[in-house]
Image (cartoon, rainbow, N blue to C red):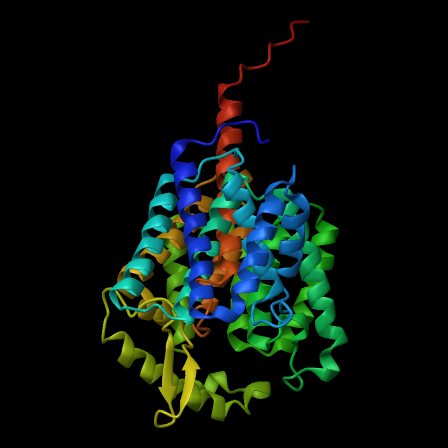
Length: 427
């Protein structure tokens, strides 16, 4: 279908991850018998979609619905977008359609070792409950999305068109539903939550901008997104957006290592921003939520230190506050990753992100794609104050599109270098 035969390691990796995803679904059904019918339906849909000559419609629909986490499969807590993404990647990898480009070796190793580390941590900690299986299923889909986009198993152009359409629809829904938002005075729509809206507007918005070719269309898309971002009143998202905009403006002038250092220092500065500055102007009423965040952060550090090397296993990034009466998810994605898979898993995820960023910056100046670079920066910054960022499908999409762009640019440059020079015209 794509013109080349997939090498053995791709087939083995795809089958292993697909088996992990299917095994996790079966595990879910064993832990929760009431979803046996859902499992049967998923398996049926996988084989139906696998029989399609082209996966384009399913991939397009999955990416359209990805920015709409508020929309759930009827009668279940599963977002429709993530469920369709599961079906898209499973159908692609079970049929093992051929791909165009290889996944870089360093990315293959870091991604594979990360998945293995999280599975090992979960097994070592003896976690075989519903939430743990569900988390491992999510991680399997995360890895398959990255591999699928880079290899071309998930058609890149189709996925990008779906993402752009989905971002437009979801953003417009936020304006339409703004008067009835569950968070009074804050932008939600099909995003479902103002902080999630901020994350997706920054990360997926930057990815979408990289796929829009005409400048006037890019401007129109940005004009649609920026008011929505402002109305989310997500402080971290606004800071991330500022960093992305500055990067698009001046990023081409920086070399890789100084660029990473500057971004790291900016991220640390954001993390250490004094409370008095965080509560200025329209954020002056956040005192109560900030005090809660401080209590959650204190508990996060306490539980992470208990098992810092291998972590506590998949799906364990929660803490008890208010004298052990209330459970909250982590408010820092770096600590959440360390909680689930220890510093080993966190290091492997950072290798994947930093490696992707440096690979983008290694391209020739004329080939650089600052919006994709900005999407990776957005992931780094948003992970400081949101608990579910590093392993969100939006991060997988950003990494997948970025690495896909890198391998295609390098392949194109290699082809141009090997092609014979045009014969000179002698008058």
